Image (cartoon, rainbow, N blue to C red):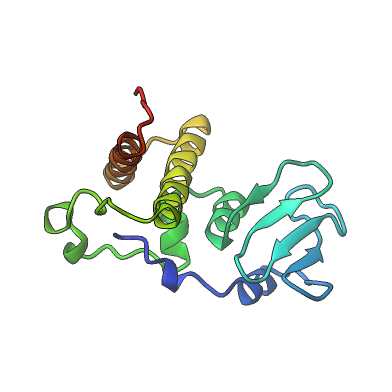
Length: 162
């Protein structure tokens, strides 16, 4: 897979590099909202990278990649490249990897896959909603996610209609 999540920056260091001062202790820290200018309305999770504006401007996301996309106005691939987490290598060519992850998974693993695939779908939908066309790589990832979602739904006996 071209996205190398393990290469995403450590959340606390990333947010501090964005000139955000993180106040408090524990996983969730308070900072200013860079999206609407609120002085102490955004909370960021220094473990997962998740962020949410508590003032209601709508800014929220699950990791530093989502923040980088929103803050810089970038698409998924551009943001991942900007963070050094995108591998444009021939070794990740679709012909050299299996089209789907194997099923027969424990429920927890299947849910983790669905979570990742739902994020792919959500990011693609967000890009389309902003008028950004999906590139071939993003379309390929979206198709793979849809196939995995369909296979998991069939395995658990849920009818999914596309």
